Structures are given as C-alpha cells and as structure tokens.
Amino acid sequence: MSEKEKLQRFDQLMLRHKGLIVKVCQIYCRRDVEMAHDLYQDIAVEIWTHLDSFREESSEATWLWRIAVNTAIDKLRAEERRPKMVLVESLPEEGTKERPQRMDDLYEAIAHLKAEDQRLVAARLEDRSYKEIAAETGENEGALRVRYNRIVNQLRKMLKGK
Amino acid sequence: MKEDDFLNEYRQEWQQDGKAMEEALSDITLEQLHEGIARHEASRRRRWLWPTVSAAACVALLATFGVRLLSPEATGTRHPAVAQNEAPQPPIMMPTDTATPWADEQEGLPTAAREAPSAQRQNDMAMARALPILTEEALPEPEVIAKEEKAPTTAPACPSNMVETKRLVAIGGSTAKPRERETELLVNIVPPPRNTFHEAVIEPLLALVTQDLEDY
Image 1 (cartoon, rainbow over the protein chains, first blue to last red):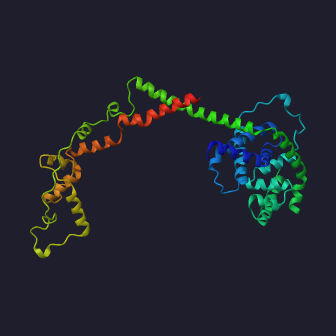
Image 2 (image 1 turned 180 degrees about the vertical axis):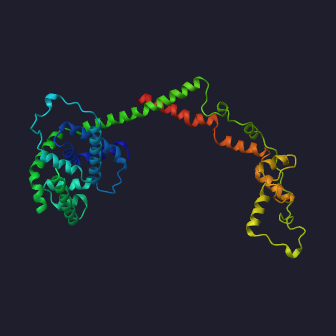
Image 3 (image 1 turned 90 degrees about the vertical axis):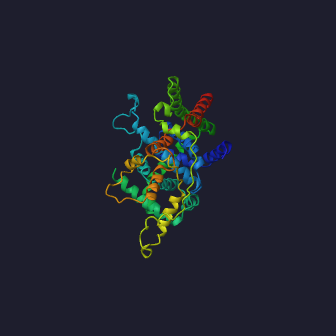
C-alpha cells in the first residue's frame, strides 16, 4: 500500500467509524473532554500505525474497536503512573460529587468488560436493535441476545458490590 | 426485557453523556489527525536517531584512536595458521592404492572365516577412500597425532592403513597440524575480515545516519 493509498484508507476509516471511537472515549474518559481529545488523537495514531497489518480477518469496525479499547487501556495505565498535580481551587467541595457516582460506577464496570462485550453494551444502551448490531458485527442475533444477558448479569453483580 | 430494565435507569444519562462527548469531539478534523500522525512519526524518528548517532560517534571515536572493531589484528585473534592457509596450498596427491581396505584386517584368516563387510562398513570405507591422501612428507609427525588422539594404551594395534585413515580424518586433508587446523577454522569463523565488516555494517550505518540527519 502506498503512502497516498494508506492516507485515503485512514481517512475513510476515521470518517466511517467516528461514532465507535467517540463511544470508547465516553467509556474511558467519562466526561473528561480534554482527556477524550487526547485519547481520540492517540487512537488515530494507533490506527495509522497498525493499518498495514489489518488483514480483514475481522470486520473493520471490530478491528478498530479493539485498537481503540487497547489504546484507551494503555493511556489510562500511563495516566495512573504519572504523578498528578491538581489546583486546590479546582477540587470539589466536601460532600458534593462532581459527577453522578452511579454513572461513574457503570462506566467503570463497563471498562472492565471484554472489548467485544463493551461494544455490545454500548450499542444496546444506544437503543440499537440486535438485528442492526448483528449486521455490523457479523454475529448471530440469537448469540448476541444470550451474550447480552450474560453481560447484564455480570454488570449487575459488579454494580451491586459498589 | 428484564435485563434491559436493569440498564434502563442508566440509559438516559448514558445517551446524554454520549451526545455531549460527540459534540466535544466534533471539532476534531482529519487535518488535525494528520498533523498528530506527522508529529508521532517525527518523534519516533528522533527516538531512533539518537542511539544511532551515539553508536556512529563511538565508532568514529574509536577509529580516531586507530582501533578497528572486531579486526583480527586489533583483537589479537588472528592465528599464524590463517596466513598460512591463505598461501597457495601444495598439490594433493590422489590415492594410488585401490585395494579393498578391509583386506588387511582379515589377512591371515582362513578363507571360510573371512566375512563380507556390512553395508555401513562398506560406506565408511568408501568415504575413507574418497579422502585425499597426502604425501608422506606432508603428514604430521606420528607422535603429534598420538598425543592429539590420546588413544588408550591398551587398545589393540591397528593395521597400518587404518592408522593412516585416522590421520587423514583428523587433519581434514590439510597440511597443517591438527591443533593449528582447529584454531585456523575457529579464527576464520569468528572475526569477519575488516573490509567486509566495514562495507556491510559501518558504511550503510553512516549513510543511514547522514540521510536521517538531512531529513531531520
């Protein structure tokens, strides 16, 4: 693949699957827009880096979702290792929570799922039908239903423990 | 569905968050992504450049002091036998005696007791015949061979042509003594000739660094 062809392919992918990348940013950055911007750029770089190795063994969307999730996990790990400096004025007052804790718990629980399970939950939370998801992922509708029930049970257990 | 009911309480907030995130990231353009990729590629090149430049600088510094990396002269690993090996070799004498090699072993036995050699034995003998036979003057001293082989003193004496075969195997057809031949082979394998090393490693490396410095 020449550099020009690679660039065209990259642009197509980024335009076609922007929604997926945004979803990954939402799961891993929650409402931190600044971090989401950085993550979006990092995901784009990773997609570019691995574009040559994409063999179309899985669908484009599945491949891209995996790259996005792995990049997000790596970024979060790197962020955790980095010492944080926070201005005292920007800290939330005691007793108040900047974000609804309930949603944060959900994001955290979803982030602990496998990449393909995360994608399914995100799609269902977006009110997308099984038929639509099956067409996108190439999976069987029935299998998706069974998997989704298992994931929901898993999430319920995780959130109950909070 | 029951399972969906469980996530219903999150659904609305999830969708709101999703819309907010989409809006926040809508200002990212393809041009910005291209710039990000270009920055990443440049930093990757820089990460690669410094170790290369350092390595090239070290090589240049060593060369200033007259040290040639891995050259046999510098490391003192070049054995005189190598030089000897590079000199033209004396002609090899071809075998003149084509008598059956196992004939001597069974000499003196009654004809009925003489056994036909096995296939393996015949093969071994064919290989021994194929080895070049040296002139008597070129053969190493018998006491040297005896020392190298450390044959057990209690072993029965071999027929004369068997001893000769062993000698030939040990020295591998060279006029050098066994110990020299062994060292010669090792020296030949370990340090590559200086010119080849310079052509194969140093010159492409320097060309690469120069090119990268120009790009940078």
